[in-house]
Image (tube, rainbow, N blue to C red):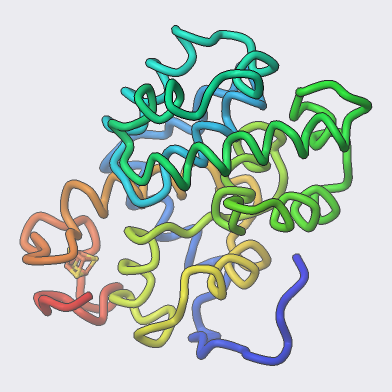
Length: 237
Ligand code: SF4
């Protein structure tokens, strides 16, 4: 994956592929080895990605279900008044911004895919090209693009959200305050590709259930061995 060479984040070079294999094994023992996420429809997955930014899965799902059940065809969303869409996606919050971004994405898909609103064509491109194209679309950041390409297209990207960013800092992999988008290219290169999905999903579980932003439950953490976690017991973001 291409890296921005101008600003290289501080990264602990001892955290190599072997290290991530070890972490993955520990998490798989704790949380299981699930490595799939629903991606029946790539366009749906991208819209879900826009709806999931800065909200929780429940609110995202409520907004997506309301939108999809009322307007099942994405072509019709473009012809629907913003007021109607705003009402439907309100559970996710930031409805004005999301409405503009959803319509912008649908227009972009039509313009880049011979008039057809279908994100599947992106999965036929080389992964880096697809990522570069996607992050040019308003509202699609590198994390949303990486999640989409990993789970819908098996692309070798490792998405980093706020939970994974926090855990990576606590483990001492990255320096504090390293932005998630700077972690993505580095982890995409170093975490073995066959682990990307499972390790990503299990880190999310760890972040949600144990290593929360406040009061991490280090006593029940599978990484409680202090040789693995540098921040054991420290309540810090
Ligand atoms: S030991 Fe504590 S700080 Fe470290 S990963 Fe586990 S819960 Fe987070």
